[in-house]
Amino acid sequence: MKNQIKEEIVKYLDGTESYVSFIQLENYLKQEGIPYGGEYSVHIPGHPTIMMWQGMSQDFARAILELVFEDFEITPTYVPQSLYTLEGKEIDLPIAENLHYEDTIKRWAPVMFKRTSLYKKDLISK
Image (cartoon, rainbow, N blue to C red):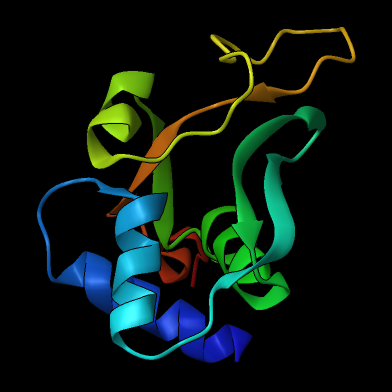
């Protein structure tokens, strides 16, 4: 299921020129009949108190982590919280303005995604 979710996310992002939110990804997966909801969340690696999103299935969370941090196929971009407010769904946590917090308070880093122009194959020299 994780690989199917990855394929669908890439397909969806390939079909748009704009940035895509977690809400839009959830709506797309729902439309495609793919389960996405659950008890998992995605945190910024190395920053366990900074969350990108919550309420995800394990496969959806793992798909996002792999696409961003392993496959380099999608790029997260920090966006104002108001963009999520306009879409009608937010995380009830203080906003992470940067990655330099050294406290134990959980924070939300609102991000949206775009297809990466630099692909993994371009990183490998011949």
